[in-house]
Length: 332
Image (cartoon, rainbow, N blue to C red; front, side, top):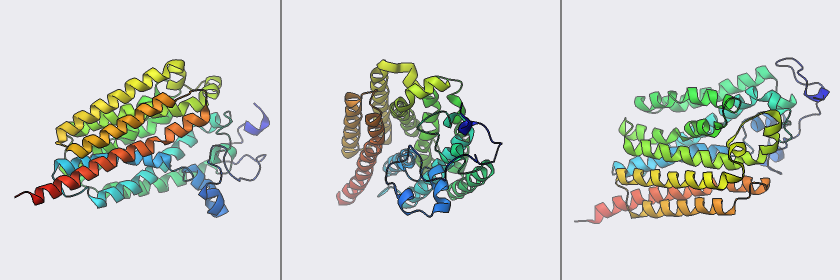
């Protein structure tokens, strides 16, 4: 390794690094680089505020669960307060997860072209400062969690162990995406837990489908780093499946659709929810059809498109709740 990447002591910035400007894997012209004050810019990059796709993907299972539970409870609409709290919590906890990941991966990040300019790896943020920032984000997430019903608080706390160990999984297993799937899908339990103070079959089925969904889209994402991961010894499903990734994705997305369909049946969802699920499934089919694992830019674009797929499903679930309620009011 060159002198740029040697350890300069835990918590000490690398003196031979240039002044922090941006990071290589941030979108060009992102709002952080354009508008954020320079002193806080590294922290916003560390929390991935320049690329909100991760917050969306963490949030969507929470919103699905809230809408599914609202329909099962025959509420007039998904609880807006829960939707807002979950949005705040998703941003905070996604940022905390990225910070924790970068703390643990700082040495690996220095060996990968796409990640060596990240704030901790580049020395723009010291290790003590990164831990302080992590604590701040966790406090925000805790404040959101404590505003939920007691059963939901306990359910949310149960996820912390999975969140903590995920960054280590790529060192010991070829399927770290499975652990990420559990962590990023936990919200599929949370909305239901808030509404019913329990975790019933529809929530568990929604969770299982979300795990398959995350497993698939993160496999697509991992194909961007396939060559670098092989060099530094990091494992992933992209390396495991290789050219057979399209088949693995097709199976995972099929399982996602089946599990979600069973969840809709269990919750007594109506026609509009099923239309939303159909549109969601068609979007996933299009991802598999378009995929070229040797085109990193395309892999990133397909990965990001899962936000749109998730919003389509949420819209279907929410409109179904509203229309079913209005229909009940109009019936004699």
